[in-house]
Length: 114
Length: 281
Image (tube, rainbow over all chains, first blue to last red):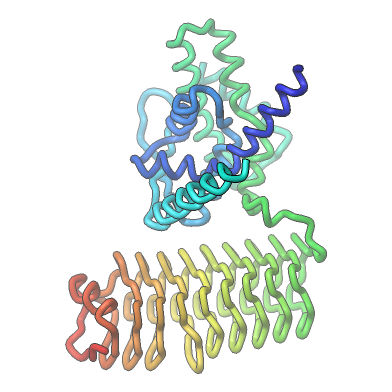
C-alpha cells in the first residue's frame, strides 16, 4: 500500500514540477515577490499538495532570469536578512500566456483521452 | 536564529567549495529561511521542530551550484554524442568539421576556426568564442547563450533559430548570414556588422544593445527591437515590414530614406522617432 501511495505522489509531483516555471511566472505576473513569498504562495494555493523547496525554486528563478523572463533586485530590509525580489519582464509575460494556452490545450486533449 | 541558520548553510555549502555566486546565493537563501522559520514559529511550532522544517526545505544543495556554473536547462544535459564541454580548444582548427549536436559548454574556443562546419543544434553556451570564425557554417538551432563572441565572424553562416541570449557580440560580423528566427535577446551587439545579403526575418533583438549598428538598405521583416538600445542605429534606405520597437529608445535611431509599413510606422511615430524622410508602403 505504502509503495503504491509513494509512486502516485511521485508521479503527480513530477507532472507538477514540469510546470514550475509557469507557476512562478503566474505569481510574478501578479506583482514582484521574493523567494519565500513565492514558495509560501505555492504551498498555500495548492493546500500543501505541491511544495517547492529552496533549491528547486532557486534553479527555476535562475533559469527564468537567464532567459530574460524575469529580473531581480535586492530589497533593503532592516530586520532579518536581505530579500532578493523578482519581477516579470514583457518576455516573461508573453511566455506565461503561451504556456497557459499550451496547458489549456493539453488539458482538453488529455481529458478526452484519459 | 540567524546565526544558527547561517552556520548550517556554511556547513552544507562547504563541500561545494567556492563558486562565483556563493555569497549571493547564501544571502538570498538565508533571507528566505529566516522568514520561513519566523512563520513556522508564529504557527505555533516548537523551536527545534521549526528549525528542522526550515532546513529540510532547502533541498538538494547541488542545484544551487549547478544553476550557476552550468546551464540550468536540463534538456540540454541529455547525453551528447560529442561531449567536449569544459575543454580548452583555443585557436583550434576545426574548419569543415561535422559537429552536429556537439557540446562545447564552458569551453574556450577563442580564435578557433570553425568555418564551413556543421554545428546544427550544438551547445556552445557559456563558451569563450571571441574572434572565432564561423564563416559558411550551419549553426541552425544551436544554443550560444551567454557565450563571449566579441569580434566573432558569422559571415555567410546559417543561424536559423539559433539562440544568442545574453551574449557579448560587440563588433561581431553577420554579413550575408541567414538570421531567420535568430534570438539575440539581451545581447551586446555594439558596432556589429549586418551587411551583404543578410536575411533578417523574425529576428529578435529584444533588450539588446545595438549602438552604432547599420541596417542601411536592408530588408527587415517581423524583426523585434523591443526594449533595445538603438543609439546611433541607422536604418537609412532600409525596408521595414512589421518591425516592432516597443519601449526601444527610437529617438536616437536614424530612419532617413527608409520605407516601412503602417504597422511599423504608427508606433514609431508615437514614440517620437524622427520620421520626416520616411516612405510609407
